[in-house]
Length: 494
Image (tube, rainbow, N blue to C red; front, top):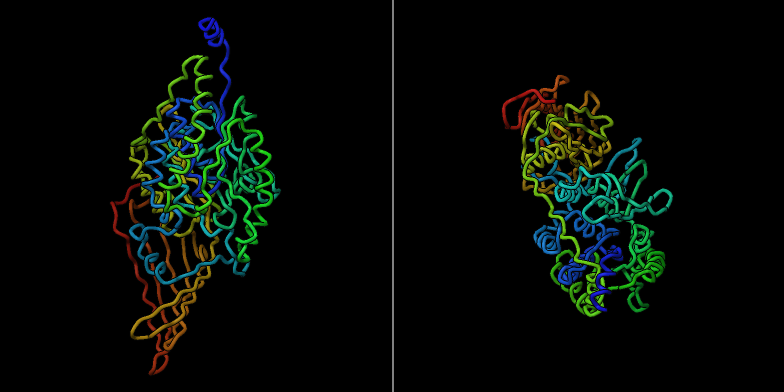
């Protein structure tokens, strides 16, 4: 009878198992601990849905990363550096190095008014980390065709609607799903301005059901409402008000889980990126607490036949690039971008070479974000550079101190593209015991014919100064200065 039952089950289609991973910032590393136990049980995951950090872990798992890979990544990455948009100084040109160290705050000027940014972090480094990690999967634009079909959730900040992201560029989709409002800038996809999906559906169980899951394991690391004795500040009150809708939505989604795992993460915050090992351990602990039920599920599914082995994620060390396209340019020229990229086509390049070129473009300080994706072709790959231009005009403030002039306040206004594309006019006022006014112009040259310089740029600077000294008013003579950042010889770019 048992043999007959097993034979009948093998002739039937196995129930599909879905996995839903909630958002929760750094608390989402608990998902990795749960995945370690699910792999140990050899549970076959057929569909994955996720929001915010759940989309990061779920998306990478869906394209072929295993729990051990994700744990190694989480422990290796310098998260403090990831949440900084500051360029490495070695990638800055000489004019940028001079101005970059002088200011503490930078704000955009729009219509002659100071404009606050839509988020504290543009997320350039996070975006390019996701680009590198998902590079092998980027040619596949349909997320349902990943080794494990995947979908993630974002929020349309204009309409307040949930947006299901199941196609397009996987790195861009994940970046949108984790764009915490006011922390990360919003991402525009298919004409919609998107932020963190946790605002409307932080625990997207219904979405994995729609994908075809018959049974669902849900891992919920969502924020819970604070007790009265923990509402100590106006920030606590503000967060509590925001969390009302999130908690209400999450409760409804929990009811759709067959197996609900809620790690004990009350002592962790969404920003505890320095406590990754402890958070992963909390996820593994809750999965082991449900081990018997999960083992029973694994045995039930195994009766239908052994699961297919997971697909191995291909390793990409180099790319053969035959074409470069740019997307997102409004006022700057393509030749300027190509000049900084420094690739002579066709070319086989390593990922390190590609990322150095991307960093040189970003170090122009004319873009909030510079990313890339790869599109495969018959004769090679197309490199698509995705750019988000900064406002051309900036207002900057800094504090300066030296033994000669004591403390002074630095106020700067920068205008771009006034005389030509790539030009910068900077007006610097120094207020202190010895006040001064210093206008400067910088022109980054990239010829219309496409002449470029690898690992360098040509600049022309003109800096007159007017300062008040203890002996009177003194001005300098306007002296044009030409300079080149050192790099490789010139070659025609494309």
